[in-house]
Image 1 (cartoon, helix red, strand yellow):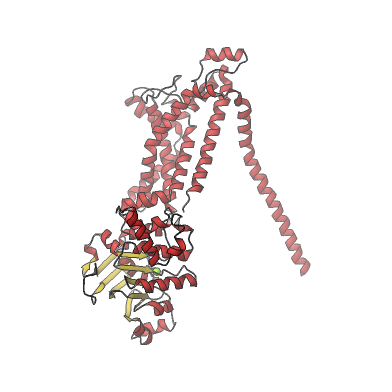
Image 2: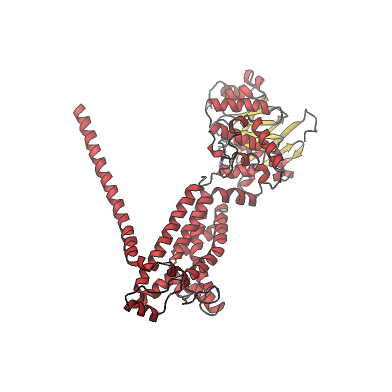
Length: 258
Length: 293
Ligand SMILES: Nc1ncnc2c1ncn2[C@@H]1O[C@H](COP(=O)(O)OP(=O)(O)O)[C@@H](O)[C@H]1O
Ligand SMILES: [Mg+2]
């Protein structure tokens, strides 16, 4: 899928507005781009619209008919709104704030859920390979290889979250969206996930929502800072953290709000 | 200061103890009638429960009278009631389970739409309709117009209308317990809507759905009134849905009305009670075994 030149943005967000209620925008006129094989962090105080922006990228808002979206998002140059939503969601995977493995499925079934839920039939050896690869990629294989056929919900929170990452990457998406994936986890599990994201960016393009500045500073390459629905500032993480251009960014980074 | 504190603690401990006894007493009082009923039925009814009780149809008055006057156990059993109940409950399940599940899911999925809310209120009303009236409705629809006579089909329809609101409500309530994040996880994988329903929603909530169905079944198993107007009852074992059939609760009523068969009332009631109780227990064990949410 990656046959476009490396410099292209993978995602290009253009004048995006999103409202949960008529004329009350949770995301206001956001334009930004997401670079290939980078971790792009979306930061900002709680309620500033980070999740709302992220969820627009795989058209999750369409599940709720009241939500209005204006503007455009291009994936590899093509408007996501002109694609079939099923294709889009296969190419743009998502990991949620709370680990949410399917409780009726085993660890194994969870990893290949994307295939079974889409009726993509695989041979047993293909499936085994996908499961092993995905679980190795999230550094979970050694921990669960003896218990692949137990329910995913028996795992610890951190393991469940890595299982959810495995489920999302089993499809080999172009982009992986992560909405505060560590906010429900303890520090040890958090650092495991952070290490994992560092590895995953070699293969995928990651967009990470976090309200944790130090996390953004530790692992992201690019950062966006949002405030009250607007994208205040974006750029390379190092630059944004050391020499913010906007006083609001500076105020946030120095802990004046958030 | 110290004594005040210890006094306080003592008082609380006493109050606590009193409440414990009160709660225990309350629960004993609720449980006693159940044991009394089952015990009573068991003592009076066990003598009639043998192989013939399950394999033979109900005796006629004459046979029963002869046995009763000779002091023997009454010959025959409840086989015609068992088969009739089985036939009607199966048929009612065939109608009510898919329809109830689909309607429940529909109402849950469209809870903001006017039409779904309307259906939901109808369901609530239906749940409050006395079962005899459902019998009358099935009588008017089926007995009068379709089978042109009392029939198992008419009985099944009245039982279906009884089951529907129970299944619809339990389905909707079960669906409500599924975290939104599970649904979103499925959609985020590109899952089509109908697949999300039958590969995620239904399996995840399986225990709740099954419990609802089993409770609805145990509820209709003992229903008598609507069957009197629809299935009527029949002395013979029959699997013809267009003809009258018997049912266990109908037989109990028949036995009750025949002074020679009183002992069969106890046996049949004992059987029905134990059966319904085990159905409830089964519902519980299913609920705990497949509980995911
Ligand atoms: N489902 C919803 N319905 C109505 N308003 C919402 C909903 N979800 C979020 N919002 C509002 O949209 C704004 C942005 O929310 P969100 O994107 O969740 O913020 P963040 O992820 O940055 O904490 C908030 O003001 C929030 O109250
Ligand atoms: Mg959020």
